[in-house]
Amino acid sequence: MLEPFAEINSRIQSESVVTASLVVPSVVHIIDHLKNIKSNISFLKKMCLQLEQATNERFSSIVKRLSQQIVYKDDPFSDPIYFVCTVLDPEFNFFWLIQMNYTPILESVTAHFVARHFVAEFCFPFCSSQKNLFRYAHRYPSLHLFLLILFLLKDIKLMS
Image (cartoon, rainbow, N blue to C red; front, side, top):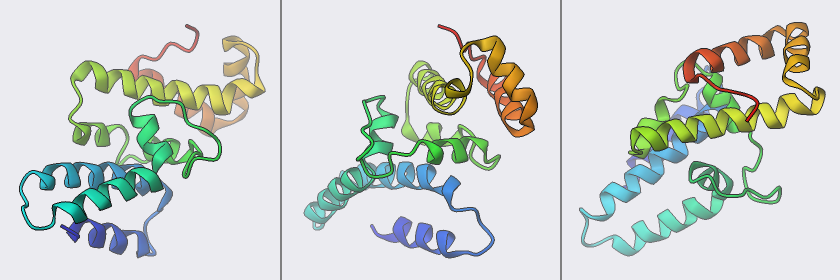
């Protein structure tokens, strides 16, 4: 039952890995593992339920974003940078959504939600229109590259 926790702990303690991009996939993996193991165990059900509850509380804003609920600034891990780092990391991108066992439509909606949230959070404060966004993005190559990747991967429309 605790094996995924040990694996994640070892990986995060590694010196050669950027840990910010590991947060969302690790939480998704733990949630999925606890959900799957819960039905297959008979003796440690209470411990499994407590681990599930503790995970949901500790990473409440990540869990809320995965289910597209409102996240408050005082929620643990409320900074959207964890999702941004995960999406920008080529090892993870949006692949962690597969483990959520979403329908293809819900998977696409969640990916769009994460991408739009990034654009709203990090880009629009600096510019008032889509035209200005790309003018601003050209001054910052990493932002420009990120927007280009999002458009290519998920066909995102910035203006609703």
